[in-house]
Length: 360
Image (cartoon, rainbow, N blue to C red; front, side):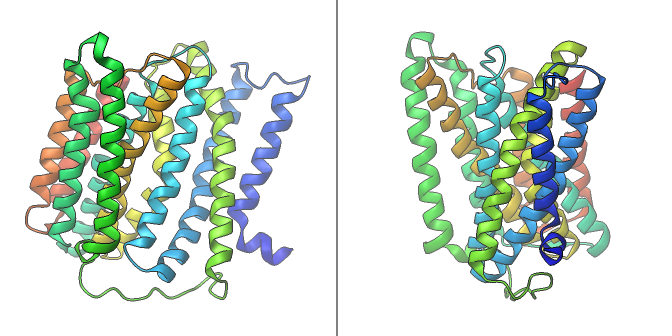
């Protein structure tokens, strides 16, 4: 038992916090959902537990990655993170008063944190440490082409759709996103998997838990993701109520949700950048952006259609402009297959601009 606790301390921390949250929620002496100083502290504790538990997701995903090879390992990490996003967004949509723009706002915040925050930080830190970091130009081109198409169809063009044709366009968006992503996955894992590898990929050495097999890591990866998803439900409930009570900017909620969503792949991407493996950082971050749009947009729209809820996916002028600037800068930064600290600083400056625009 002692050995298990040491090996799976993230999962144990997650389990203890989850049990405590359930007890507090249903305790007659503590009104857990009611916004007060106690629930604000609890939300901070839950947030810290989720972020810490994300390191367990990263650890198991990295073990599986070394066994499966690229790009399957990175794809696995991306899809596990997206499962958390889908669950959290769906939970928030059904909690409290209907918010037609919640899914859109969360997707937008996730994209900005990933490209400008995490990719920018990986470029900046990697550039300061190694000067320039090389990567496969074909992977960046493929990612940004897909991201541009999905953003245009899913979040820009809805501005021009008439209200009486909105349902038809939403069905088209669902089919377009899923079909395009399926074709991309086929290319990434079969026909052109070499696009997403730079140089010779060496097998990673196993350290902690090195003697355990793929089934062990897959099971505990799923357990950790499931635990984070359950804990995220309580976190989203407390945050939502606290924001209403304290009259804080409503955009804090999607930013916090997005921060939780990106934490597993964010930790891995920055670590890869500091190890001079920028190709892996690129695969993780841009792969997560792509999955966020291609999978979360259809889920949000399907939930809206199934429950007859009004859903807004279109971005307003300011956000649409900043998002397109981000994509254009990303394309320019990756056009020669090398990254440096200046490119990273530009992206991170856009990230600061995003935060200022959302919170002021």
